[in-house]
Image (tube, rainbow, N blue to C red; front, side, top):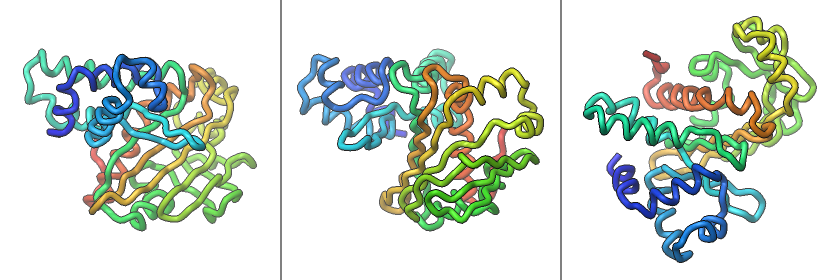
Length: 262
């Protein structure tokens, strides 16, 4: 956490975070244009923020986009916030809220964390029903080949649809698939009101992508969930869901035991 506090101590880096909070998913050029900083200075500050995991990046064609990443602030809030006085705790809570706000200019959800494991083990945790059931409560029925159908088993419901497919499968590096269908059976099993289910179902089908990158003894895991309707109900619903799922995955892989939520 020292890197996080060091990164936040600099007003220029806080300004960069403010810029991304106002408009997430910016290129280096866009960040430079919106701030009174030289390109080299912006690059150096972004490197510090990336090292602290407060900023994560994703490629879109030839462009490199920068996103806020709430993972390290979540860790501070969840593990140590009760050790601080009220003023400091409120400051961390305000920052945590800011980092988790829905982006104004892009609907993509991007979240990065580091898991102390191997790419092979993490891939298994993402694809093996025996793993996914323990930290997610969901099992996938598929052969994980690009274009293959996926059947979701969640909350006691079987969710099948021709548009639930594997988009990309590059073992130990990248996995992508379309999101499940918001069926009546799923809503009933999950306790979702019919009005909410109908709102979800009326929106475009989204896609989730997992990027795995070796990082020393760990693996950098980036979750990119995209394809939402602007200001959509699904985008708002997944905001709190993914951090919990990823935390559960990380805990299970690193300790062998599922995450116990307070």
